[in-house]
Length: 350
Image (tube, rainbow, N blue to C red; front, side):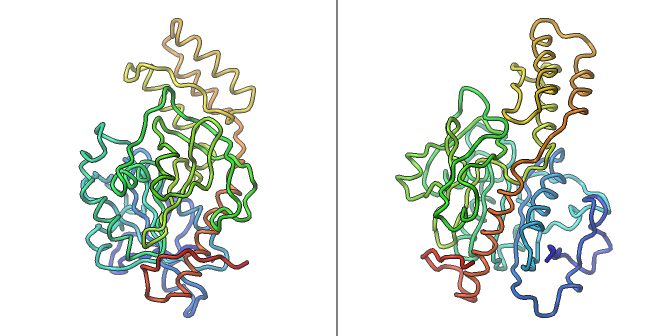
């Protein structure tokens, strides 16, 4: 079943068009869908990535939702400037966190954002973020915390601070998963996941405070982990939701920052991502930039990226993970209708 957008029907704004597909309306939802769950998405990304992030998560939910109807509500945190949406964007129908806190949802997804301060507790959205986290403990069956949202959540919950690495973990990182857990059941033991981060969370501290690590990389630490805290909280340091060209666009952005003098380091190629032809061309251009860049270097980088052939090798594992998450929520909702604070894990039947 598709994702059905929950929005104010009195609004004249249409959320169609910008995403490349037409939103199914709630009035087209079957009268007695079985099962049907309510999911909220809190999109904290800045203007440059706002619509793409929205599209990525909605597309992933849509792909994972076969046989499950999803009513999706969109929210934005207080303290984060949101781009002014066009009339054909779903951004025109985002609700405030205040409206979220007055209701209950079966599931919640909270995205990350690029931090403005060294200490996440100094971020303008910190108070609003922690209010949402406290709400989610008793008003959802499960919540996903993505990237920086995962770092902020464990800092608030257990005082675990993230650690900066010597180099950026960037590219398709090979992960080894614990297939015995219900959220990784059915996934291959080894699978790629896009990562794009300088910081990470120490596995030993997570496990000491009751978190269970579900997947890890060989040299970049933890990929995903969970903790039962009323709701089942699921944390991702990677980005299984990324589209085929997301890492490409991030690489292009970082090259531009370096060439404009906004960054001190020319970015490394995303690992395991580009095919050999594109990788070789970009490596040569990087060497040229480090020795004596020409005025047209960014144009040539752009040209090399435009001809890149990207194979999305992580999508099937990402869909499997989110399918398991949706099935977990359905099972919890079925076993404890109206209850959002059961402390024990349950199994997903297949």
